[in-house]
Amino acid sequence: VDDGEGLPAGWPSAIEPRDVQRTLLAPEGVFIQFADGQTHLYAYVISADSVTWHDLGERAPILERAGDLLHEISDPARLGGVDEVARTGKAAWVALLQPLVSPDTTKRILIVPTPGLATLPFGALVVSAPSDPRSFGDIRFALDEVEVGYSASAPVLVTIQAAPATPTTVP
Image: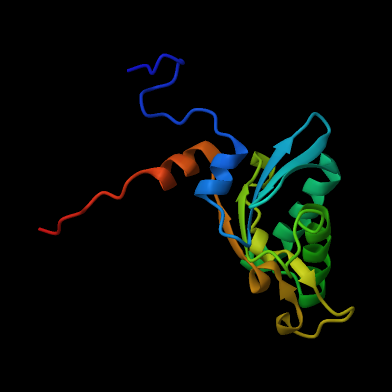
C-alpha cells in the first residue's frame, strides 16, 4: 500500500531537526549523523538547542584512523597492546568525535554512522591517555564518559520512539 509519496504505508518520511530534538534527545544528549561526500566526511550534529554541519576533512585518512583502531581491538589473535590502542583510539577520537562533542557537557551520543564507520565501536575511541599508558585502566575511553547509542537512520528511530506503547499479554 502506497502513502501517496511513493513510500509504503507506515514508512517514515523526511524528518526535521526539531523532530529529533523533541523525540530523541535528553538535555545533555547529542545526535550525530555522519555523511559521506565525494572526498570528505561530514557530520550533522543536533543538540537540544542547535543544529550544526561539520566538514571533518578528507574521508580516506579518517576511515584509515578508524580502521587502525578496529585492527587493534577486533582480532583476538592479534589484539593491540595498551599503547597501540591508546594511540589509534586517540587518533580516531580526534578525527571523529572531538570536533563535535565535549565529554564534559555531553552525556549521551546517538550516532548514525556511514557504511564505512558502521563497524566502529565509537565507545572504544580514546578521549585521553597518558603518553606511556601501562594498563587499559590508564585510558579514558569514550564509553567511560558518555553513553553511546546507534541507529541506522533518524527517520526510523523517530518513528519507533514516537509510536505508542503496545500492551503485551503473557499467556
